[in-house]
Image 1: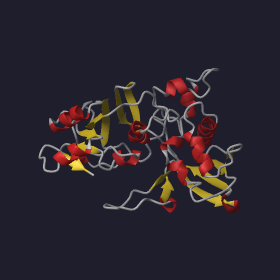
Image 2: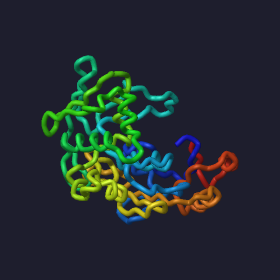
Image 3: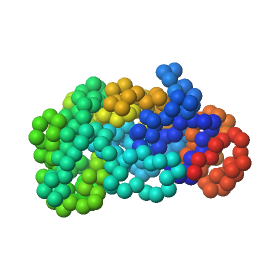
Length: 293
């Protein structure tokens, strides 16, 4: 989050990757909001009006959705103190167990690991195909389809399913980011079994339901959602890497920066984000908050 956040006490970090919350240790606890374990309460400038990855809303999407998303690959966790941007050769498996590049990179053949969604449904190649088809046929903000173009994918025929656990991404013009684009939350793989239950003839990709609910294979799921005001996350008990130690996250919309700062300094929230530079400067010597850059 760079210089955009202020934290109180020694609390866990809400970062732009689901594994960042999942990896927080037991000594990083904030207040317990739900009574179910360690919790984190965040005052943010805004809260999403839709949870759908196809309804991109800027920083408030970037700060929240990676924590619920399940993607096929991810970037390796940087070493402590790292200052360089990560590169495509630092990609590792996430929902994919492995992959190979064939035909000069024109065939990216994936094998899925054993993983379950928050609803207990095992991930299959059909989930990936449904999700990729959804991206290609987007009626939202088509960033996923744009990324496919950046990665040189064959968007007319992007995926070929071999069996329940194996599929191939077809690439027309292979390049350095053909695989790594799959690490972004825009490329979320949805639990199509659950999502299809809420689809209609007018809404075949369940935009309405997925705007208010999560059906993913990521570390967190949505417990409650008040669009534009508050979202509460809870740990996905089925997450294949194990239940996160920070079990509950509450993000509340507090548009005024002064109010966010006051909530943090008084200990009413664990994290306040998007401070002004003047406010950040005033906190340099503060004993009421810990400044993270």
